Image (tube, rainbow, N blue to C red; front, side, top):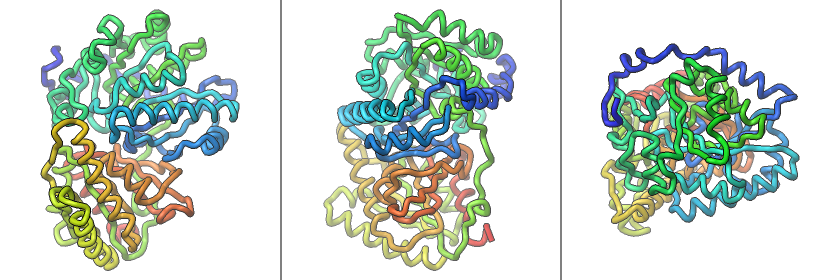
Length: 485
C-alpha cells in the first residue's frame, strides 16, 4: 500500500495477522509491581492535557519545582509513574525548548534526592502535531543521549493507526493517511508526510536520514511476539541510535512492544519515547475501565454544568454544532466573538463581562451553559503570529473562568490548550488525580487541593479531535441535572 492511499478500515484490519493476547497488559502490570523489577518510574511530559486520556488513578502535576517532584517520586508506587503538564504545544519553539530543559533538570535533581530512577515519555498529539524533534533534543541535552528514540502515535480511541509505517486517521469506515487530514494543515505544526519514516526526515529537515530510521512491523509484533521484537531491538539499538517507528493497530500490539522494551531496559538499553496516549497506559500496565457516570461521581444539586470551548479543529466545530442542535432549550450558548477580542483589551473585557452575566444566571437556575469562541479561524501571517492569536483567545477564556463566581455542576474544557489553561490558571490546579474517562479518550480529573478554585469539582479534558459528532452532547446529556439522582 502507498502512503497516500485511503483504505477501508474493516478489510484492512481484517487482513492483518491475529492480534496478540489481551492478557499481556496484566502480565506487564504484575512485572512492574514485582519488588525485584528494575523498571524506572515513568514521567510523562504531556504537551497538552489530553495525554491522560487512557489512564486512571495516576497523578498529574502542573508545577515542577524540585521539592514537589521529590515528594511525587517518593509517593509513586514501584513501577508506576506520573504526568507533568507542560502545555508546550501552545508555546513558541524556544520557549518549549527552555521549558523541557528546565523540567528535565529538576527531574534529575529530584530523582537523585529521592533515590529513584526514571525514564521520560514525551507524550504528544496522535495526529502528529507538536514540537518534534525539538523536545526530544532538549530532553537529551539534560538527560544524555538515549540509545534510541521510539515513535508510537497509535491511539485506538481516536482512530489513529500505524500500518506499514503509514499513520492513518479513521474517518467513518475509512483510514485516511494523516497528511491528508485537516490536522496536517495546522498553522503551526503542519506536515506533508504520512509515512512516519518520511515524517521524521521532514521534521528534522534531513538531520536524521531515512537510513537511521527503522520500524517494528505488525508482522514482527503479531507473529514474532515479544521475543521477535526484543531480537530486533537488541540487534538495531546500539551505537547507531536509531529512531524506531512502532506499527500498531490494536492496544495489544503496544503491549507486546512494551513487554519487549522492559526486557531490553534490564540489559541497560535506554530509550526516549515520543508517543500518543496509548503507549503511556500500556507502559504503566493500566487496564481500561468504562467511562465514569454521573452517578459514580455523585453529582448532585440543581446547578447547571459548564462547557468552555476554544478548539478550532473541524471535529470540535461539528461536536459543538451537534451539542447545540440536540440540546435544544436545555442548553444556553454564549458565543465570544474572536475578532472583537483582538480589537483591544477593553473590547475583550466587555465580551467577558457579557458572558459572565449570562453564565452566572443560567448555571444558578440549573441550566447547562456553553461558552464558545466564534468558529471563524483567524490566522496570523506566520506560525508565531498564529500562536499569539491563540494565546490571546486563551487569556480571555481564562479571565472568564477566574471571574465566574457561581460554581457549576462540572466543567468540560474543549481542546487541549483550552483545557490546560482552564486547569492551571482558571481553576488553580497544581496536582490532580486522573479519575478515568468521561467518554472513550476523554479524560476526567479531580483536584482536591484546598488552594484550587473549587476543590473536588469534576473537570473534563475534552480533546479537540476525539469522539463522534455526538460524543460531547452525550456527556452533557448524561451529566445533566436529574441524571444522577
